[in-house]
Structures are given as C-alpha cells and as structure tokens.
Image: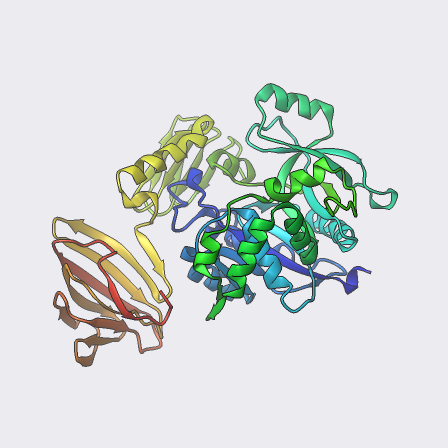
Length: 491
C-alpha cells in the first residue's frame, strides 16, 4: 500500500545556470529565481510534490552549496516548509550529493523512498508528474532504481537520452528496463532516436530507497561511499544547516548519478541478486508533463506565455512590430522595434542581447567576465546577505557607495578593515553601532564615521527595516578586506 510508504523529497541545488546570465549569477543561480510565476524554481520544485495521493511526505531535504544556504533557508521559511539543508563544502557532482542525502534520510533507519529532483527544472502538468511519482514509488518500494524519461517532442541535441528496453514486469506498465544511456547526440542521431520511438530524454529525476542507493554505491563506487560516510560522521549542525566534514568531502571523487550507478544498471539488464554485482534493476518510466530544464534563454521563451506575435515581455517592456522575442526588464525600460528571434535581458548592471539561436554561447561571455576578474559574472549589484542586503549604488577611484538594508533583528559581524574607512548615514529606522569600545544608537538623518582598522558592528534593534547609506573610502575596497571576529551566521 502506498499509504504505508514514506517519500523523502530530495532537492539537489548545485548548478550555476551560466547560460541564463545576466539574471542568473554564480552566487545567485537560476534555481533561486522566480522565472516562472512568483515562486523560485527551487520553491516550485518543493511545491510540486504537495498533495500526492496516498503518499506520506517527509519535509524536504536540500543538498546545496554553502554560498546559497541563507537564501534557500529563507525561501523554504517563506513557504512554511522547514526542512533539512545539507551543505556541500565543495562541489562533487550529483552522486556524492545523493549519497549525503541518503545518509541524512536514513539516519533514523526509516529507509524512506527518495524522490530526487534537480532544483532548476520546470514541470507544468503537475497531475501527470504526481501520477508518475506514484507509479515510481511502487517500483522503488520493491527495490528498483527508478528514473523518469521525458517523452521527446523534438530531436533535441542538448539532452542525453535513455533507451527503454523490455517491460519491467507485467503489472508495472508503463515502466521498462533501461537498455542504455547515450550522450547528447548530433541532429541526425537525435532524429533517428525520435523515429525509433524507444528513446527518452534523460530528466535527472529518480526514485529509490535510501538503502538501495547506498548498496548500489557500495557495489559501484565504494570510494565515493567511504568518503561520504567519513564526511557525514564528522557532521555538525549550524542553525538550519548540516555541515559535513570539509576535508573528508574534499577528498571525495567527483561523479554523476548516471556514470556512477545508472549506466551500470543498464549494462546488467536489471539482474537482481547477482553475486558479483548485487545491483538492483534500473527502470525508466516515460513522463509527459511539460518538462524543461530551462538550460538557456530560448528554453525559457518556449515555456512562457506568448502574445499573438510570439513575444514574451516581462517587466517594463515596449515592443513594436516584433516577433518571437523575449524581453525581460528587471528595472529600466526596454524598447524593441522591428526585431525577431531576439532575447533582451536587462538588470541593474548588465544588458544582454542575443539571437535565440545563439543562447548556448552566453556562457562564453560569463567565462570572459571571470577571466577579467569582473564581478558581473558572479554577483548582482544587489547582494543578499542573511541579515538583509546591500546594493552598490556608485563607485570610483578610492570610493564606493552602498545602500544597506538590515532586517529587524539583523546583525552584521563584528569586523575590521585594513584598507578602508566607512561613513554611515541612517535613512530610516534605528541603528545600533559598535565602534571600538563604544556602543550607541543612531536614528534617521544621523551619521557616524568608522576609521580604518577599527573594530565595528551594525545591528537593527528595531521592528522595521533599517536603511542606510554607506560611503567607503580607501586604497582597496574589495569585499575580501574583512576580518571577522564574531558572526551570528557562522561565516
């Protein structure tokens, strides 16, 4: 009975989404953005499992990079979905991430069925998705490793494929044994796959019991399993977060779920109990649920609602005689006249104009920004912090101006700078200032000065947001000129 099963949603949130620059940045990637509706992609991933009939759901378990931890915790809090957040001190691909999730989910020997979902995908037909999950849960309960293959609509060259084989069992239609995995094909090969009919897009969605994954890793990649077990044994809890042993996890080899385990299941044709492999059967369930991995701007254009001319306009946008164009404004007016098949994206510090046929090459711009050491490749002008945010308003030689907003109860670290002094002006709210040995309050229209080399801290003791203007001056103004002595957020 499905009602007796516990399903543990596992959200893998490790990608950077560089092809969706400038909206997606290395330090604030696409899964944290509300690209489709008001929810971020991560929030939509968590929400799409709500209400699956006859299934008991555990709170979500997110595995993510440390850089995203506070934003993810806040997004889950806003949803009323407190869950576990396991932090990867360094990226090691999806197989180690899932291994950490399995260890976390099974620590009380409950052995739930893991529903493994990338945080950055879109699924528009929730009923079809949830029906497939119920089918997958029944098979995972029997010991199978289940993946979901997307029924292809076009000869897509940007996805890997799964070839489906024989029926898994008479009672498990439409599930089929996995015949093989294939890499991203060229166009002619993709067209042949579409005609042949047994090939599905590789979605990266999986269902399996935690114990089954750990056993499969023991058989296929014991080196990864041992490294993850060592890191998990050294874990510590830090507020909302579980931190694994950094050095132990850094020593873990990097590998994907497909390479580490799934391809080996296909090679063994689902034989169970083989003395040499002890591998579970690998099963694929076809899925037609409006799936997209939103890998680039053209993919986003495809899934968003369009006007009669095929245009998508978001934000302050005016289009005149345009066709099949995506225009997205985060603030300033975008005006397009007489263009077709373009993507135009505006943010506070960058503007992208690209033909829809070239959106995969946006990553090359990000690579060039990184080589030049420019911050636009990794950060937005407005940077979120656990205590609030700051926005770089202006900068020049030896000065920088920021707008700082501190949430009620927010507290910055006790810190010092070697190369800059700071002037603080309160715009609204109340600021509690620590400067050297003194502590005092500042109200609206009051200001203070923090000399270079002086320990200082900023707090918001009030019940409304604190808004300030900070003027920095000095020989070096980089964010890495911070010596932290105390920090409420464990940074």
